[in-house]
Each structure stands twice: as C-alpha cells, then as structure tokens.
Length: 132
Image (spheres, rainbow, N blue to C red):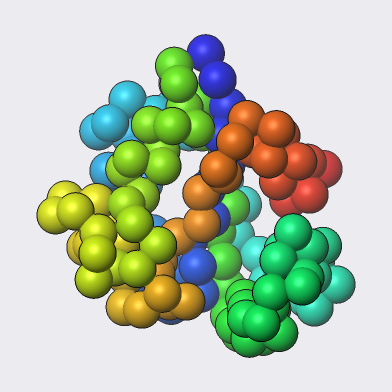
C-alpha cells in the first residue's frame, strides 16, 4: 500500500464539490485515512508551494490558495500516487480526459479543483506539512 496527498482547492470547496471528489476517490479504490479542512495562511501556502518559488505564477498561486477553505486528504491504495494523478487529469481542465476530476470540476489552470502529489517523496512531504 502507498500513501498520497490530495487537496481540494478553494473554488472547488466553495462550490460544494468536496463530496463528489471524495466519492470518486473511494470509487477508484482509495481509502481515506485522514481529512482536514483548513484556511491556509501565507506562511503555510508559501511552505507548501516552495517548489514553485521561482516560477512566475508563484505569487498568484499563494494568493489564490489563501483565498478560501481548502481540504487536505490523506489517501491510501496500491500505486496511490500514480493512480491519483491519473484520476486527477491534466493540469489544464480543457486538456483533461473526460471522467477525470479536473475535467469535471476544474475551471482554469489555476482553479483546477485539486492538487495531487506528483511523487511518493512529495506525498510524504505534503502530508507532513498539512497533518504534522
């Protein structure tokens, strides 16, 4: 079994999409280990997205992620990281495959409904940042 992390972003949380996103995860074999809704402050958002610090969109990303409630979810299953990335879909919802989370719930590249860990190491790092 492998652990991974996903985070429902502010616009998807505000739109009431948490329950259907969680249902998709469970329907695809994921076990929900822990779940936590929170308001990210600037310090937490900067720490979480530090990998993007030098990217031109970093400031807007931090501002967006601190704009409302998010929900962090610790998930588990075989090949959890790669399977979640498949379920999430392409970063740009317009390029996402039908049936993926971003296809169904994403609005734009930034407001794409969900963050998902891109490697087992990052999953552990992100789980530690959010759940301690």
